[in-house]
Structure formats: C-alpha cells, structure tokens
Image (cartoon, rainbow, N blue to C red; front, side, top):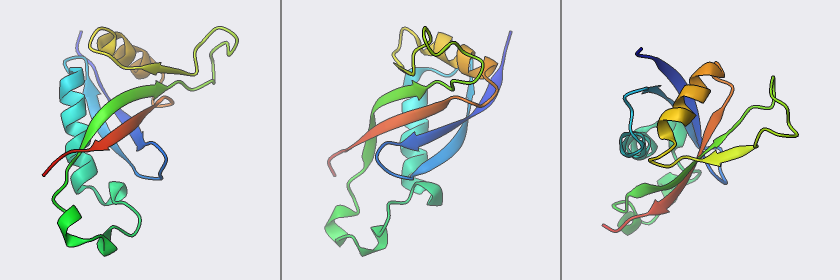
Length: 117
C-alpha cells in the first residue's frame, strides 16, 4: 500500500519552518536531503537578519544533524505516549506511518549544523 502525506518541519530554536511531502518510500537520507535543500532555498526557512550576514558566511551550507518528531497530544494518552521520538534509519518507516495516521498533527523538529564551504 502506497501513501504520501504533507509534513510540517521546524528548525529548532527558531521560527524557521516549511512543509514537504513524505511517502512510505522516503528514506531518512532522502528526508535529510529534502530538508537541507528546502532550508537553503525557502523564504520560510530564511534566518532572521540573514541579509545582513557577512558575505564570506553565505557559502556555508547547513545540513541536517538530527530529526525528531514531536507527537501531538490530541487523541493519545499522555501518560504512556512519548512527547518526541528521534527518527533513525531503523524506525523511519514506522514513524512516517504513525505521522500519516495522525493527519498532520505531528511535527518534525530538525537540528541543523553548519557545514564547510
């Protein structure tokens, strides 16, 4: 059975965010690449005051360091259901399936790190 669904992601410690489509064929590596590309190009992911950055910092690309899913509390027992889960290669398919069943209520929180030029 094939499924795809929209997902909101936020970049931690900021208001930077965007949406993307995830499917059951999406791997963690695919997701990392998709988020890195969106973070670099999307106006929703632009850093505050980025236009005032030094020119030599402009070529440094951010890459995804870690992805967590923040589970929505609605419809889940808060005493037993976790607030967040780190997405790994081993659990990515299951996490995506749970997110698809959550109808867009769950959010990916992404930690980015600066790469080298």
